[in-house]
Image 1 (cartoon, rainbow, N blue to C red):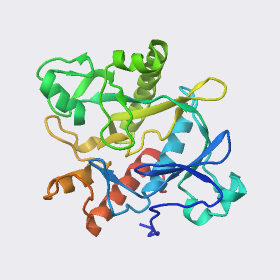
Image 2: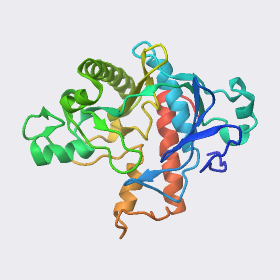
Image 3: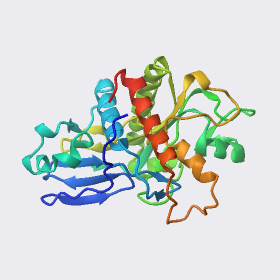
Length: 299
């Protein structure tokens, strides 16, 4: 594995920092474009950990680029380029920390909801099902087990939170925020994106248990896919060969980090504890393996 210095926080003197999220630094390039930089920060239980995960930002950027291209016939997206050499000069001056982890994208009016699709019963969906028998208004058959594949994928939107937990909501609640017509469109396109991606990933040895999409409206009024797409940060990736119903699964996503933190005497409040080197390295290896399986080449 190539060892590179992790990027934890970026500074671009000539650009306005719009937002520093849990993982991404977002800059305004001009009235029409943004620069999204995926750092090597990792968050768990709503806390950014002090330990970076080397190459994580590269994986998130490269996988998003891959999926944007592969799924472009289903939904247009905001990506203009990931090539530093094609970006404005003020960005190229910061090539060292930005290359491989940056997306130049179109600005949009962002819909304030997460478009979550679940094909398997896991995570907060599994917890909701245990408590109520339904997930975001979807009444499910009784007797389902943890990690079980659903009869068909379900659309389970959530509110967006820069800090703290996203909150699962029903389609009716989503319609009250963005309108019924937009809700129906986002539901249908999200399900189509998930189905095609899940079928492809399964052929490559990965189960996409669930994922989240974000959408915005561009300057022409067109609804487009934004943010990231089908990465280990926005999805639950399971190795197909070890999949077994009735328990939590091994994963290519940051569940490995969560599992380590769960074993600690930590109250899940900031400040978060550091990760041991071996946990950080193993997490990098999982992200890279997910990329290599899906894309068919090394990053």
